[in-house]
Length: 122
Ligand code: FES
Image 1 (cartoon, rainbow, N blue to C red):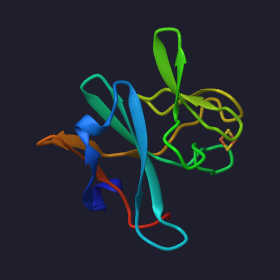
Image 2 (cartoon, rainbow, N blue to C red):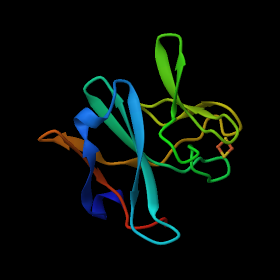
Image 3 (cartoon, rainbow, N blue to C red):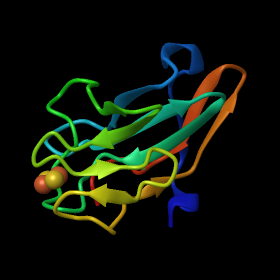
């Protein structure tokens, strides 16, 4: 399904700290599509910004997605604290442990981060 969505530029690769994450929105109105991109080294991963627990956005409107844990980082849902592996989207702690974020096709070209995503929440 995600292969049918149009590919869009969501940010510049250099806009992402390492590690770093930021939200992007596509579409207008009450229900724009909300996604997030996260950088780990030279790699970028994209996920729908929808927590599998209660289908809320992981963030509170800012780009405060990452928590450091020892040498690594995890994505955190600000609502009830679920933690997700940035590279796999799998929840490793919290009320939706074992479930996962919806992946989005993502690549970097000419310094820009491109993601396939729908026009609004489906
Ligand atoms: S909505 Fe994300 S942990 Fe509850």
